[in-house]
Image 1 (cartoon, rainbow, N blue to C red):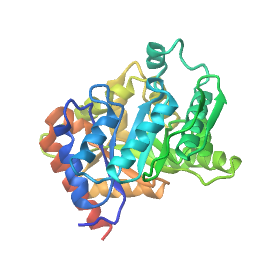
Image 2: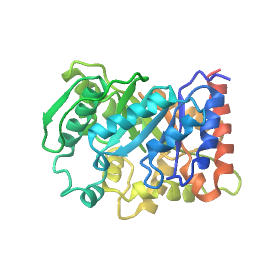
Image 3: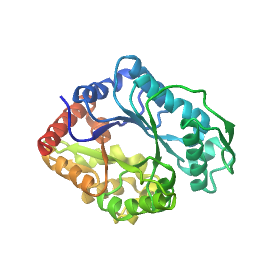
Image 4: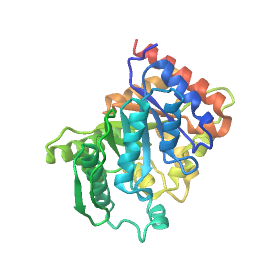
Length: 326
């Protein structure tokens, strides 16, 4: 079966075995469309998980949404990304993010005083390396004088985690994909897409496409949607940069009260719940607001009911999307 709509899946927790992510890979390979996304895994490394899937015969597009810049030099990040593309035989999205200041401080001499500068240096070095060029710069955060050994591989798209307008403008200048999390559809259309276009125009390049990770849960008898939202989004709702973005979008979320923030996500429809057909219709609204790749994030259901319930939800949502798209 081949799907005509570009709908992907985020494996929603940090896996401790490859077997945990196999059902997601099988579903996407069976459908013949969509990308498997993993976030930064600190149990089993994200890139090694992707390489294992490729070695098991899963030839599906993959993407990181997002790995954290403080963990590796841009040269190593380029090697890892190109390796996944080569081993999987499919284009790879290397999504990168600066991480929260607290995480930066735990690994670096000090947090990025200018995270936009740090990410611009990082992404520019990666792009030069992946394009086969010699990367040379003495940066404020990342210095390099090196070139990758040549290797034939499918293309690597560079993704940048984007929540707010300044990062979106910078992403427009250096990224191929803007990867957004918990970003309301109207906020994407009214705030992020114009900022991406502004940055791209200034750099005389095409604007990045938008891949948005969206919390989803099918409303079923006995299922507590608010609890699913709290369990699935609570960690991000405890982070100041996420809650600041949500308040800019009109969703009253504050880092000191993630439970109230989760309730607000449900009220605002940012945590997308309902019948499979209602969810499909809401995902279509995201597409109409500038999202090129919808990424389903079933983390809430995973936390409260487990993998079997998640797979049922995903299959029902995909069936509804197929009906919607004919």
